[in-house]
Image 1: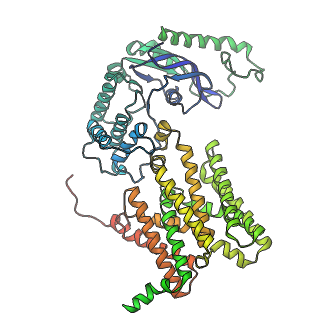
Image 2 (image 1 turned 180 degrees about the vertical axis):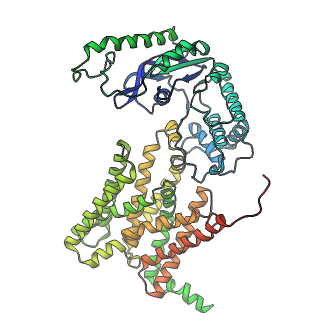
Image 3 (image 1 turned 90 degrees about the vertical axis):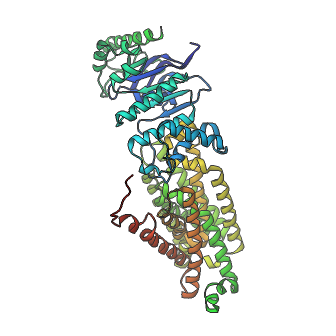
Length: 279
Length: 291
């Protein structure tokens, strides 16, 4: 696909040989705005980590079009709020892709930073130490940093947690602005109504992809029902995945044959959902 | 006035060993104090302490083979420090074990090894020298070493400053925009080892970490900016170097502990009276602004 920003090819991501994202195929169009939905443990955050490259695929591949600048806002930030930094220092980190380790921050850069702060409604917060910010204010500051990063692909992992209505409205407006600027945006969201109102596309995950496409169709009741039926817990005795081509099958001796059929069937279904999306 | 001169200046103008001691301590303060600031901000102050112990077997190996000479003991210390830093760093980055536990394991083994090696040959006087150093017996080679370490440290800090700040403030972000995260962590550990080895001649393994950690810990109570904190830590280091040497001269105390005790005084003053210290933050305030 010529205008794909991210391409998944039979991607499986996971931990300790247990899949968290199972056989995902498809592509995220350049300039699209996609909500990633699914219950806890359905692989949403894992997928984000896979796209950023922080988690290597167990099988298959995920490819971001080369040269794409990526901005990623993780769900569990490792931000140290006790670090002696001001809001302006935090937001200026976003200049890294442009200035790197040694590039001088110019007057123009400082202007970009203060405009970003203005855009997220944090005017006058420049000199505030970051340990005095409220949760919502910090989230606004992190959005300002993404603005400064000027990335073509923006990945937001549950950015609306513990956020009040007015901050939510502002953040949604920013996301829509990025969408309008033809940036590719993927957002992990839990509020389905929010997805239906504001997101053109959605990917419904339940470890395997359940549905992917136009948001309202993806979130249809039958899809949500299917998504709810997956088992979150790992099964230590689960058979090795048959379609996993580069897996070593030699240590798989027992209970495979009679389980194979049901398992393969599950794949077919997921694969069909994913193929529908690509088509 | 003359008495003041006699008390503060004369010791340094009259005695060459005091001048050397002062030069060594000043260079060490400029170099080790900013490193200490990052050590503290990364919650690694105790790691610095552990690293100081870890250097011991290397220095002891040099001491066993060549006697009390700076070059072999320094090289041995650097090697031991590097092995412990890399080993502990690798264990924490590659396994589930956190750095505090892996560092503790490595340094305890290292310290036991070091004490064993020193006791194999040396008397307890030698052990005291290795553990507590002699700032008043710095020779040219030792001063040269401290000077080189200070130059390397300042150059590395200038180059990696932004990455160090980013790695402390938001490591996940740094990983998402750059591959420098892990290298910069090891560069930093390398600088810690380098400064501990440099300080070890002057202050000994046990106290060299004091000049690194205490001024930084004191500076934390006065400011909310990293840059200011580093400068302030250097200033505290310089003040305590001078006052420690004078204390050691006039009261006939061992120089290393005298310098560290001076820093300790500054630390307690800062804890109490700093702008972010106990009195300023715990004093009940009846007036507040409307916004």
